[in-house]
Amino acid sequence: MITKLKGFIDLSSPHLFVVPGSLGVCGVFLSNPNPDAIFILFGVLIPTIAWAGGQVFSNLFDSDFDRIKHPTWPIPSGTISKKEAATYGLLLYSLCLIFASFLNLYCFSITLISLILATFYGYLGKLKQKGFYRNFCFGLVVASCILIGASTTRNISEVAIFAMIIAILIYTSDNIIGDIPNIEIERNLGFSTLPLQIGPKKSAEVAFILMTFATILTLIFWIFGLNFSYLPLAIIALGSLLWTNIVLLKDPIKFGNLWIIHARYMGQIALYFSFIVGAIG
Image 1: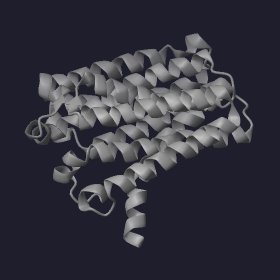
Image 2 (image 1 turned 135 degrees about the vertical axis):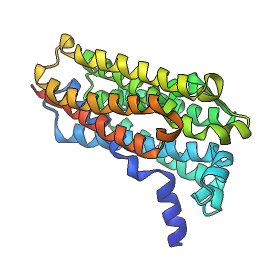
Image 3 (image 1 turned 90 degrees about the vertical axis):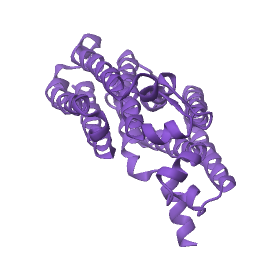
Image 4 (image 1 turned 120 degrees about the vertical axis):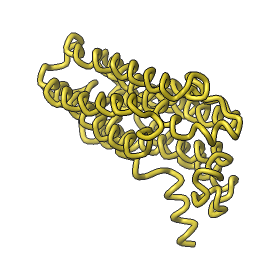
């Protein structure tokens, strides 16, 4: 029983909950610099539960790949059956939609669209289609957490939309990086990923270009009304993110690993905190 419970917890990747949570609360403050506590709560809760459900379906659709790369994970190991995983994912989806419906129609609609995109992203993995459009789909799904957070306040501002565009570029870059170390396994399984299509080196270059565009947009964010106070922390965060991209350019296979992704997540959280600082002014 304990093993199965742990399996359900692991399926939702709780160690990454800080990503949707920070994006959601960022969206809340960008649309309302002085939000009520209830908006902050749901701005964190809804994107996090949506992320958890998306992770479950991603693990479900990627079970063939995980059977080779991660045989001890809940589904490949048999701890959680595919039917149990699908039921669990649907329960998480239903829960976040129920919470969203308590707030307003905008929040419910955006959350529903995000869930559909998240499931589509996972299903593309099952179809073994992991080219650039799947990378972009990942960026769009994760960045939508900002929009979900903003929608809790019924006021989706221009700065929230601009922040979402920046996040799309960052997480599309992240997803490309994540595909690089799996190139041999995915080749053997017949996948079609960007690193397989154009090579690891060029894929790292594409990821760097996307991050560069994200950096430029962040540095001119003040044009859309964000207070200049965001810049010092944003520059530090961007520096750490660009550093990881530069390291990858030197040796994509060697450095395209989990610690790079986690290092990037820390830089991204700092970046979204800088946006909150700028929103508060």
